[in-house]
Image (cartoon, rainbow over all chains, first blue to last red):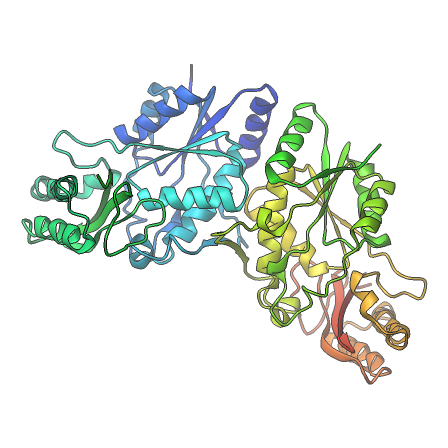
Length: 286
Length: 286
């Protein structure tokens, strides 16, 4: 089947409403394009759980700070179209910036609590931009399911909160992080890395594995877990760490000691050269 | 037909979705209860334009400041139920506070621009509370139409902006203000007024009429129009004015001079005793 491009919100709503009327279930996969296997796994997940998959492609300016990489964010529409079609997406929702943010646009959605720390600390306006654009995408695509990658872990918590608090009634599906052969989490931003830094970037994955190892061996002291994480990252002196910590997976709270049975997330953001990379993994305290 | 009470968001969504599936058009009429003829005219308007009318009754705590009248806001459920049923509403959506704001609720919607002045100046958190609860009510009731009273004029601009900016795709219908025989705009808060103050409250309407008169006679200078408004209000020395001004109806901008053909709104908020009252009227510059 041919991938259908939809450029306006009104047309997307019309199509989505008609599909709803027919009793078809829709999954939306929001992306900023430059698709890699991580995105494609989300589209495939959508195909498994729904009748119709809408992939959205919009590089959302409001979730980038002025000093961030909005302008140089990688774009390759022709490749994205082909990958999206090959993965079985039915629609590609492709609004331009004017369509999403016409003159006079003045609304923003703020979510307190889980957005304050980690990414929220280093990218203060980021999550408000994400929440606002995702609410718009939800209303444009009227989905039954929305599929997000676990790689943006804190974002997935934010989306669940947005969905619950504003009563969108959508089932939020979080799909596992897809990694390169050496373990580096796939990201459109990996293309920024020089070959040398690309090789070094795997240390992010190794540090998470090291922390998971001590947890599985019985360590429950957060400071010890974090120090293992940071020690491991020091093997690459060029890495600048924004944060690297273990936290409770559902609330991101950071107790001194974790309890048996706690589900925790190890999450971090680091800079390597001019590239900022994030990764995370979930582990249960034995 | 009997009015059906719905208390949970999930049940309301289920009913609304089923009605959508059947091809029925829904109108929602959001209220805080203590219904008067103004509300009833909105319900009747809903009946005219849609197949199904959902009246919502929720005294929303987040749109009241701590020093405002949330606790003493008038409530009379039995009377509301009867009036709502008699006016032809099909459903009464009646969530409690826990249903709308469960523990951990942490989302708010901010709308800049039109919310900053007038009501926004004197009730700083009010419009964020309104926007957030209305977004929730929209998602709970999935309406094709939403009917609001012109009496809360600035609120109607906010709702239109919310609807446009977040792409709810709802048709916002603004229904004219219903007045008592002497001209006082109907309001649940009128019940706060002592008999003496109730008699004096009509001066609000008279002041608007006075301003409209000079506009119709050719005055286009905003300062002159405002001074007519304020002079007229001075006939009741007990009135404390929060604001009283003419502004462009669509943007609330306040140019020094209005142009022929401009649609303007005359709007005000005053205190009479412990009661705060608002009113407005739209007039075209000849």
